[in-house]
Image 1 (tube, rainbow, N blue to C red):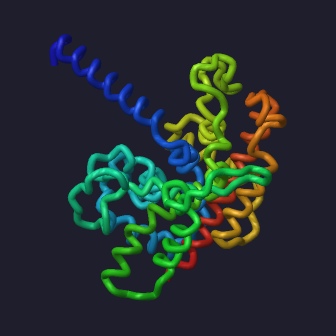
Image 2: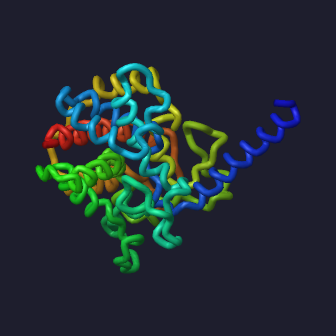
Image 3: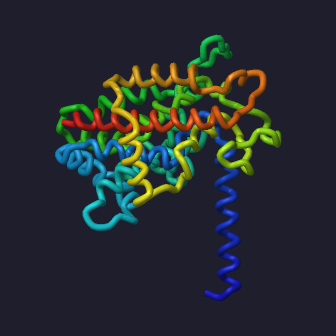
Length: 315
């Protein structure tokens, strides 16, 4: 490759990354989630809690998924299923940028083998519930309300069925990566409150800075919470070390149903989700940030344990 070709290709890559960043900034607030590191951590924690029999059942479902090869392209040796499980935790976010899939208001893309539909289902990631004292216009559409509460029930049921038919197996294959992702979303407390409450200040306000990265503006309080697990590209040995450290730091949560996960997150949002006097000042200081990081770590650990609890029951 000549220097000219390399320069052109490099410019194209930079343009592509810039375009992806711009697109992400215009996504609905409620479509965001823990960053990739947060989802990988909760999946890593869950995998480590699974006995060998459960890992084999999970691995069989992952190996039948159309995107298994994508999830394992960097894996080596006998770690394929573990790598697939951890990478599958980010799949539900990645498909929002995948040309194979479409949003609810776009023309449908062609149905591909192994998928029941090709919609990216952005409204599955959240459920909007007003905080105490908060009011908002009634809008019961799926996009406005969100479907996280409904889909958790559907996915847990699909994975728990004893039906041995090919149809039921295929439903489990599709449900597994969604559940791995949405259990973590259910433990991010701003996924269960009205998205409008999570906005900070106008995007061009220079005073709204991230305490962890002073040169980076906070677009929203939701975005601040999403990035608390750490750099979004954490993987490999560093991810494993962080996973072990979190499990050692925080106890296993009490068993709970999906509805209780969401209620718990709603309570956490009311108590811990917003800085004092946030509604008037809309500012985030370092003390709040440090406490928020502690809460985020606890929620990720809880998500991992509870995901493992569901998967240990696979028939």
